[in-house]
Length: 147
Image (cartoon, rainbow, N blue to C red):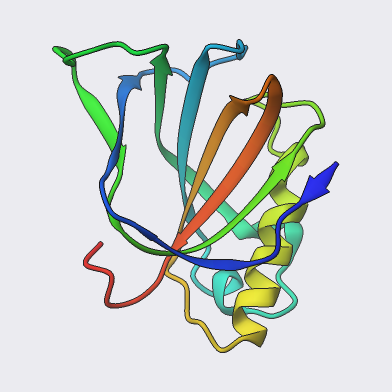
């Protein structure tokens, strides 16, 4: 698996998804999934967070299939703004299995705090395919980004 270094990413336009009332249980190559979690406020500021306590509740789930054109249904989005960003290529991806990306979220937080960033208490997880390979992307908004 290939990991990207921690980056400061400015997302110029929101990424919009159809709202899903249930957490998608499977994921196909022509889809994208967006998950949004609240984080435990105390754990989200810790350089050594408790893995079992970091994730709070699922705020929303979204799904995009191919180029769906104009969206007529309820939508959710990853807002435009400034984020701590990291991604991993390869591996298995399942929207319902947080174990696959939770360690990555903890490392992102540790690296971000070490670099003196103060990421907000919400984690966005984007699951997609690029060049036929599964990719997991994590976004944590940075203060002052308007989110």
